[in-house]
Image (cartoon, rainbow, N blue to C red; front, side, top):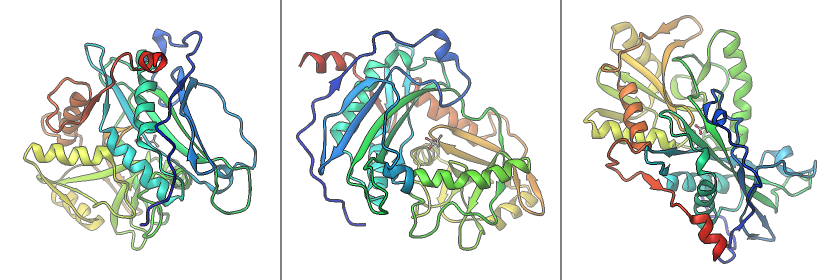
Length: 373
Ligand code: COI
């Protein structure tokens, strides 16, 4: 893929406007629903006339746009999902933010949007988190979900690429995404992605297109869809908003990264942790037939999905048109999924060594330094 030509202004000075009175209450950090308890501040940065402007941090608020804004009409929009964690000393950490930065810009290029300069993404993220560090829950299993997103803002309904864009970061308190193991329905009609498409990008439209098949699966008593390859529907690819792993005997198998598969940061981390544990991991196509046969033979130990929001969730059942495979839940000691989830969460929360250098500390007083500079 060719690179997108863009002009970067000098490292932008950040403009910070603090909220007058925080909305944070003890209850804010105890919520049990994902995605609607937003922290005090947000970051906004506009791209106009081929240049990224100054990043601004301001109180979380509604924004106003033209009804002709391109993103609404043509879906020129993408996003990232990341999390911040707090350890027992109150320090705040990001997890592999470089991976999200890289992926956001890969998505941007695919959707013909200008990549975000690293200073805006990283310094902006750290300053926003420094300012809202009290919003990062200290409770194990909870975190502050970070949502960087980029969208087309030009007010014009000609079907062509926008010339104006906005990059924002909002954050929301994140409890467990799913409360129980999931029942997933294998897609035999609808597809999430096809070769040459945008499956590997975190394009907003990928999620919109998943909602209808997901509703149909829910009406049949399932929680989510397992997406299969568009050409044959014979291979597992992703599930809901997650990458998928199948464990047959003592081998973990997951679909290889391709144009159709999201390059999940949790997926990559799970593979690397499993390999550190000395467990065999195969990145190769996952035939549905092999999973069915393993289930019949008793060698299908577990199937799980993983992603930033979900972390890792074991599947309780896989539904095909003619049968549903029930998968017995393994104990903490037996389940590789449960062990990997704990290992990962321990690293993220600074409760374990960080052998691969994934944690990035958010320095205190960054905002004061910027304000006093
Ligand atoms: C994430 O795991 O960050 C996701 O992208 C899921 C999100 C759509 C809630």
